[in-house]
Image (cartoon, rainbow, N blue to C red; front, side, top):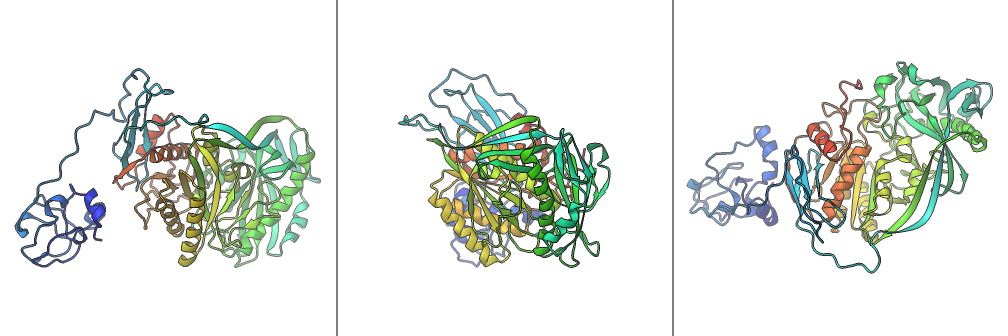
Length: 604
């Protein structure tokens, strides 16, 4: 793959290698040279062997070839009429502490402070001098397997704003009341009393009538001490939440605290309802308890097991039937929760707001939209519900803007049955760490959250991505974070979305599972700031439900990286191999918990 003139200028000090066979008399240009960015992979594959006598790009540009040379051949002085001077080395800079060193004491506060950045084995190290509100800061920002190092120039003086930057303007409020639940039982009526949820066991006979493709349902309760129990594949984890005032995103919502619904499923032939990987097995080994989409360590689990019509597991209607029938049961509990005045464990006060003068940012969440099992319900009547919502596939997978409060109020019900580890379940969205982190950041102005589906056909992918680009442009934003669940097919859209933002001059950070198994097979020049979600020791989809998704630690790294990219980051190549030690080291430097790995599907 030959280089452009701009690429060659960025690689003047790198080895010069012909991309194709070239003949005597050629005047060498950038178009004749292979991109050094892929040399590591080519050497590993045995396609290229660099020479100690090889010249650099700067030394060969404009020289004339004195004999024929084959493709992928390092250029040496014996085949050229002359050799240029080497590219000048960068000027020496002041020493920046490495990841193992503590930052030096801060100097006296200054009006502006230089920011220096360097790469340490896949780590972006940032040191910020003393500023008006900072007593000096030194952090490392982790970058994924395909992410680069970069350098931030000294900040330019900023003219005083007419109004104080970040002045808060509240648009609407949402109060989420978490109601204490101490137990759940299957009985003869549905009610909530003294913190105990009782569900009428006979309700399953009514629930299955919601969809003829659902042949049977079974309910049971799993307490925290009983989790070493076999379970069929986990289709979803859904909280019990209900509106008591207002519509989604405003007013008051009650959330049952300490209990969740767990949907599992097979078809009539016993085939697990799953797609890429299945999470059937012992429950305590097949769920990453405490992650955003999962049950928490102390949660009571109400398991709803569905049997759907044979041969419908890989269609859209089959899995949807299971979700629809389970939602009938959850709604019966919601109706009781509306009336129940139990102990309020905690309250969440959520605000949709503007911070005028701060950088305007959006969060883009790519969701599955490839048909079959790949779908989601958007904006149902009840939080995390099904009824009244629209499926993104039926909407053409076009970008749909929601407010942060709507997302935090359960506007997404996940139908997706992709690989368990990278699946963002319904509970994930109601407590999405990136929404929480961006909304709470007083240095940013979160405009909204865009959900965009991932179609199956390439032409549709490009069409939808172009619609996203137009939307991002019209919002006049200063930066965005783009996430995707899963990997592979949807990475095509993911990279296109990043390109749509990048070509419009919008700083963009990508968040995805890549690691070893999900390495990006497509890319573009704007995909230069990536954050890795993987938490498997080998870098694989490990069939542990909710393992490798957006967590608080991932969100913190992504937000920090976006801030730095908006500061005018110059992107440089980075090591391509995923290494979880980099993430752990950076989490510690950011004051976050170290990422725990999962070995062979067993949690530690």
